Length: 199
Image 1 (cartoon, rainbow, N blue to C red):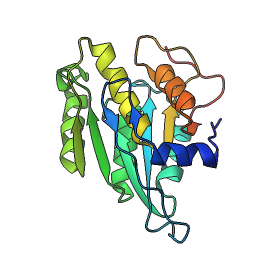
Image 2 (tube, rainbow, N blue to C red):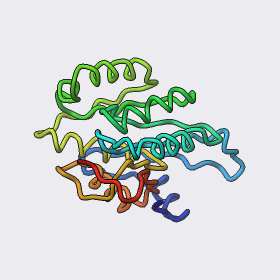
Image 3 (cartoon, helix red, strand yellow):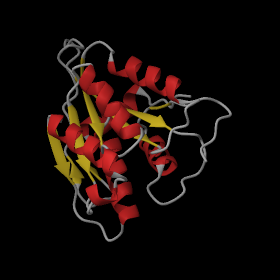
């Protein structure tokens, strides 16, 4: 399931400064010249997704991520490095030689990532990232997660969503970020297996 955006809409997003819900302006990116080849333009791919991914879904998720991150041209991956989809995406990007930008929510993030194994993976991936963006602190963890998701959408040319299609279980969940991307006209590629639900 893939969301689409028109060429005209993409051009407007690339040339017009935007004020995001997080309260800061996203600087416009200069669109490539008609003479530019795909090798000179960086395609930014962001990720949003569940922390818990059922085993029945994992093969299709991994193959979909590998397909997107092995595309021709220069790529950049945007991830918050949370457990589950975010860390899988970052690992595959790095394995494919794609630089990763870590987008860190404005909160005591590492302490709330999960167990010790998840935190070790987070630190390992963070050390391998080409860039790090620390977002302004938010009043609640949910608002911090949502602000990070919006930042990724605002800077992405494509959003990969590891999503079961169900409503978010809290503000800033996968469904909220997907809805924000679709309102913004950012193409969304959903990776999941039909009929499989999370616990």
